[in-house]
Amino acid sequence: MGNKNWYVDWFNSPFYHKLYFQRDEKEAAAFIDHLIEHLQPLPGSRMLDIACGKGRYSRQLSDKGFFVTGIDLAPDSIEYARQFESDNLEFFQHDMRLPFRVNYYDYGFNFFTSFGYFASRREHEDAMRTMAGALKTGGKLIIDYLNPHYAEDHLIPEENRQIKDTSYEIHRWQEEGYFFKRIKVTDPTLRQPIEYTERVMKFSLGDFTEMLAYEHFQVKEVFGNYALQPYDVRKSPRLIVIAEKYQ
Image (cartoon, rainbow, N blue to C red; front, side, top):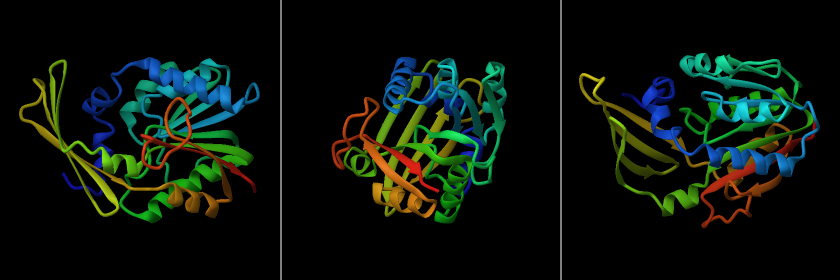
């Protein structure tokens, strides 16, 4: 399939969630615990989970008593997530490139490299504008992205994974400015194997700092993994940015 809008079908596929999210929930829960302990949000804070998928992180945040909204492009993911809605948890199908509420949230979260996959820099700037517009002045935005420098050094070209009855043949490569991953899925429910090709931009800390500054954010802290240890440009697997909106 073509690269331009590969994420539309892939993120809505059950095979995507099987590959990436049927994993140990403890890591996700521990990351949220570390973040909340570090951020110290006021009770009742309003939080926006941008590109929330099936709402795993949204649910963990709402369980802590915060008012949480999850938005995602994939209709099946949102349909699944809505079974968990409550007085302090809601979900909407929404394209993150388009505005969503204004000056409403205290915190915004973009987890698990749920950014970087649009076709142009302009579209990413539109998504950043959505995040910025949704937050109040003084609000904080947390972006959890891959560290492109680490990913370049640790790229695994070929990988085969078997998850229950589903086989994944994964081929990875990189070109200037992008990481690519072609995934061939074989499953008993499919008449023939299907393929998806992911494409993610190599956004660096400098890129995020520039995009955030344009939307009146100042980068306050940068961490390199889910334990919130210091960011090292070559050794850290993640690039976790905490920025504050100053106007």
